[in-house]
Length: 121
Image (cartoon, rainbow, N blue to C red; front, side, top):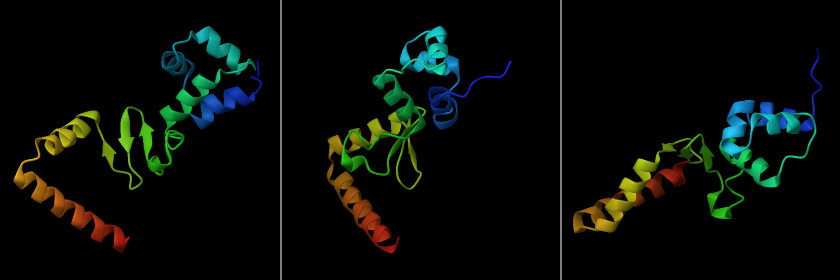
């Protein structure tokens, strides 16, 4: 039996790369509900957005300062493709909060180097 290719099925399967089971978990819906979406029933906007964010398509919609950043399968990825885990993000924030004199000096050096690299690229 041939499957009819609906816009919803194409969006979920090929644009977002999600299985029915993954979609159901991500959107807190049943597999049966996802099957209905595949058959043409409207996908709620909040579920479409979650699927896009899972794929890494729509982080910039939160704020324009996120241009080039993606949230891909639980990891934040910047425009250069560098992945940042939640633990790395918290560690970086903690180091900034400590604010020791040596940390500030190191931070300033890192920022200077990053700016020089940015001007080269």
